[in-house]
Length: 415
Image (cartoon, rainbow, N blue to C red; front, top):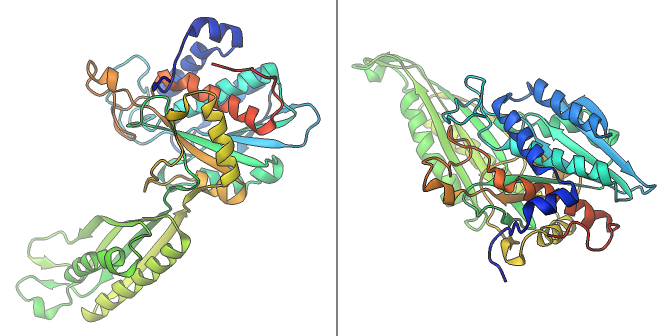
């Protein structure tokens, strides 16, 4: 049995026979990469997506949840419906790549591969629209604003996504550098952590640095809070229930000889369960208020729960695994991939509908020997989506529709 994640075989003949048009999909991907747009500003991206869907005969709806686009493809008389989601937004990062399709927009780039996600789903939409070998509906969800905590998924849901476009199950996928190209990673249960941010403002009384007794040191109080908050993870929470609490900002004062009257710090909490988050938030408030009291300072606490944990459902995950195994060898489907403390707003969709979120390996180790930054991580200014996995992603969506409806002719879409 081959251990390669993907065996291309007679690629050109196979693609031509099946009508996958992968070269066209890659061209779309590179066009999207060169013209990135930030969250809720995906106007040109959404317009291109809508134009292509309409040209393939897909019923198309725009401005869903802001700049989101939804395509509805119907076939037969069946009432079952599957939702497939891709994110469209880019990041506020200055691209440092020098290839031809690099970003043409200063300070904005597709550093997370959403250009690839959008292109792969468009490739599947094109194929499914041409063949329509299913009985029911496929809903293509092109989502804005996944990055930055803006929760474009929630915006689409609040705009009636699932009331206007019924789906029985919903699926998403993300490229994953560090995992072999074409290998899939998935698991039942939590795939990615929840995202909770916090901002703390400590207020005391400023004074001259030479006369600290005349003030109330907010800076010192804030420092004690930062240290004490680590006990939320190490002493207050069950160690089996994984979580992270990181302080990432600290601001206080602007003079060498003045103890400031206030200090602020901020950061993030990540975990996999709602009860753990509830407990951590309770302990968080107890600690910062207790420290503030001991230093005779006041404190303002703002805790924002942005994304819940991305938690896969059992039956849809088994369906996804079935689709994956029709594309790559079973040994290249990791059914118990380690969850990550990163967060993903697809979690909001999984709270509304059964579904599954998966990783698709994007590793470019072979290229890194000749190209210094070929294997750059997500959010790196040197990152670029691996076009070598575009076909695998397109085939995954097609096979997933196959698995969902179970009405495709035997042997279709085989490797």
